[in-house]
Image 1: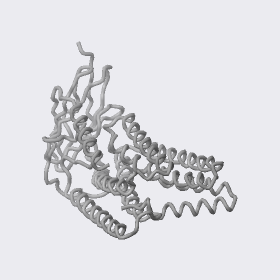
Image 2 (image 1 turned 45 degrees about the vertical axis):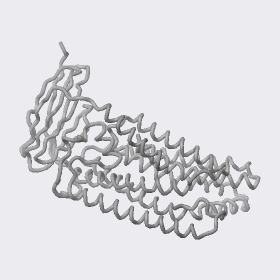
Image 3 (image 1 turned 180 degrees about the vertical axis):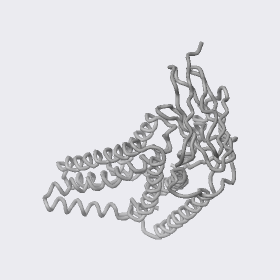
Image 4 (image 1 turned 60 degrees about the horizontal axis):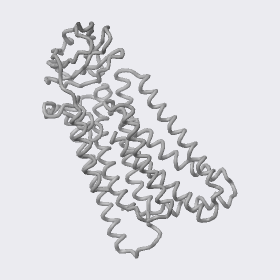
Length: 288
Length: 117
């Protein structure tokens, strides 16, 4: 539940931010009449993403045994790649995203092509939405202990908070600490991704697709069993494994160590650069 | 954000920990290199069971419900023991469990569930 909440909060906010910037710009330029094209594009993309998510789930349930484990393992590793890329891409992109979007909207308006506006919203939502579908599916594969209702409740909660934050941005308020939001959620995403990485390669080993990942140096089953609710919860969220293999341990810590070092190193570099700049310039959305 | 996230996570952890269930009648299942035993078990309807799975085989083994039996897959590393809680359904019938080598052959265990008297 917390997993789906966090994913939807972060991904949902990226979508909400883009929509808020586009709609806010249209409002400022007296183009409120074109809101419907933006919403049409966004809704169409959302439908495609729901379809993609359902497709993943149907594929997984139609497979059995080791084929299913292999499919889930590969999806989890793809999700790790997507999460990592998203965290670092967003850090670079956030600084110019407002300007880029405004330029694209201008082009769409001057060309007079309503379709251009529809497709602008469609593509923006589609990219984030497909990521979300993949991530939720990867999480759902390990979050079997959670009921579907709770999992969806978490997702809905995350989306609701993200939408509210998007609305605040749309109203033009600058009260949201966007930089801090992206920094903190970036760290959380890297931690979630490290857990998925460990779970993913464990699935691949169970499916027989990859060989033995080495011995299991410890066993904490007596302290916290993976079959308990708390054990399952931590398994999904942090990749807790009561008896992990050396392969899992090594990959988990090297991913987390390198990822956090690169991310936080970049964060402090950007902060140092920003503090040297005059305030009140365009990059309000600048990410840390 | 940072400040509010910590109590949220802690609260959720405590909540789920408190809801974890207890164990039931223990049933021992032993996995060896030649398969798992026993392959036939009996229980009452709605009975709480705890499968104590001992893996004496060289490789890992997994236990999982089959044909609609609601038991999630649990991995038992080589040389280890895992306790798995399971509550039988309220209807009579035969439940199926599979005890298997990940990605390999399996032993089917039948659990006959009869009316609680």
